[in-house]
Image (cartoon, rainbow, N blue to C red; front, top):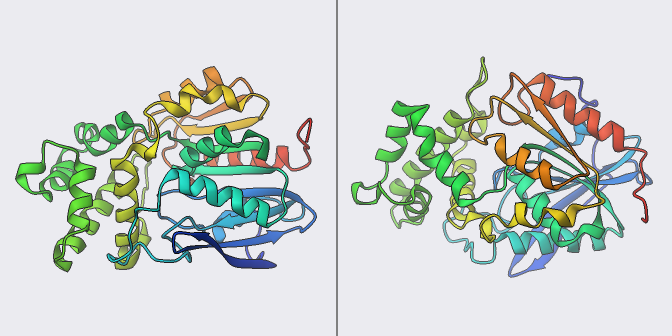
Length: 325
């Protein structure tokens, strides 16, 4: 692991923000109260923002804001509970939550850091509210288009055929040729607990496989927790089956709205679950972005070079003030 900032930086403020629709989202702030504001958007959807994220920022320079998105982490209600409706859990709701939190904390602009699904959300937020964003630091770049969902849930079977066959065959035979995200979402809503639990287990097993291209990959221990598995599987299938509740291709189409926002996109060439063409296409439109390709690493921050590149980016921006801010 690259040299992260020290552990043990604890929040000096935290709370539950009532965002409506019966949802309350957990937030916390740590680091320097007078520092440069920075917001973390975690992946998943459904992973939650654990203490690790604080260590990607210099705590002496940044006012670091962590947010658990609707339905996960410490936010309520918990999507792990099958009685929790996801009707008011969409990208548009999350964007509104982020803006409400920014105003609640009295922040004018903040750097936004996102990974994987957090990139999709960060791009959607910045394109909707460009004046609220000073910089973007993005790794494992995704835009959650229908093509990307099909790639992960079906085309990746060409790379991991045995594992994918198990993933597909957990679905009723009559549904195997259609959308697997739809099929799993239906199983996760089944009245029988055993059906829901099997669906969550098999979904998370496949999630662990398609990111396992880096030598020495270890299974994600979070999937051992049945509540995490259910929460994660429900939220991922909910967002994927709706292609992030965005017009297909909208993030690339509207990337011109990011003009004037400096950014760094960091992507591993071995990240075959989220192919690099998405980041490359964005870089052609978003002229203020730098694309950093890591030759021998895959998805997420399991690699030293990817983590180091994220730290380099946050260090670079820590003293910067956006022109016109």
